[in-house]
Image (cartoon, rainbow, N blue to C red; front, side, top):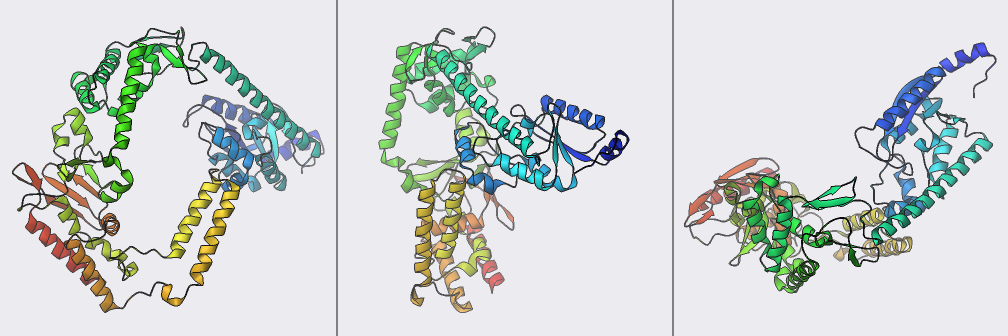
Length: 549
């Protein structure tokens, strides 16, 4: 509270006041905003006219005024109005770091300077944001100075009430304007026009005339895709032909997912979907294909999708456990992650860029898990020899039943499950009553575990001799390829972080070292020297037994 005795002492009092300038914009770039710069300039000009010292200028770009500051995540999670708005909002709704920094510096300042109060917050009705920010300002005796609207002292009941009413009125007006905008957009869409413009490969949209026209060669590619689909040609064949003919039109290459995007858009047939999801005629340009061809292409795509779902080879729940090398193999030429395929019953990994763009160096990164030639070792043999790297750090946690089934203690599982449920609840994806039911079940499971007899509780860590025997058993099972798939995958991802595959070598990134192993070419098949794999296995096992004991 400041006491102003006279006009002469006013300047002296204001000279000692400190303020922070805060600016915000709801849209635009995340790096620079001209509107924010104008707000800061206006606030600094007001501070100079009142002879107030500006200690800092903070700004939040491209974020709504309904969001909370950083550090108030717990309060935001309990705010049902904010969580409901966040789920309905298509734009990202994060937290404001600059506002969080402002809240932390309230004790060192006397006032906040903003362009207007909506820059500080634009709270939802029944949201906790306004009350929480006001309480922080009142507790630290900080006033709000507006470039447009004068000063606000929230400690005064009348000013606090007026501010609250203005915020509620603004929120209701914004909600009404949003509903009116949606109604106008729906009318425009139902009349055969796209209210937000047209973004489609092969079409050029003119925002002045609100019409679109074909984009030369790209429109020919669209027609070519529809012709090939109607001819029932494979997606990979279409992609390969487009990359061979029109490679200069794409930064890297044309991908298969672009075909799905093109085939789903009825604008190529001169049609669009209305608000009821029905096809209606579009009046903004000419069609590239006929409506009959578009509908026939949709049927072909759906038939292929249905046949793929019905195929037993696409049982992802069963095959996911059979692919321990997923997310480990990368192309040494372009750095892309290798994809899995099946070749005469053998699992292979290949670079898709090499397949689609006919890039020789990328195609050379193809690698097989097993080699049928007796004098070559496969990738599975090579990586099995390095599984001992994982035992250097995970040995104390290995129990006697590791080879039978990977055992996880209930308290660790309980903690992970509890953390997952809490995250789902705070993000608004889990209703409150389900949240409490899950918590009750977890509590019962924990109580039953604690009350279990001693023989059901996992035994303590075995002694050195028994532990050495267990490690030897694991290494032997890895050598004989008899490890359970789950255990093998777990040890593999602990021992190896990344494998870069080249035409003549592989580079294996382990936690403590990087290995280079040459690839040998024998009878149209690439593999590794069995003696090299044997030496790696022997040295790795020796390191494990020596470092642990």
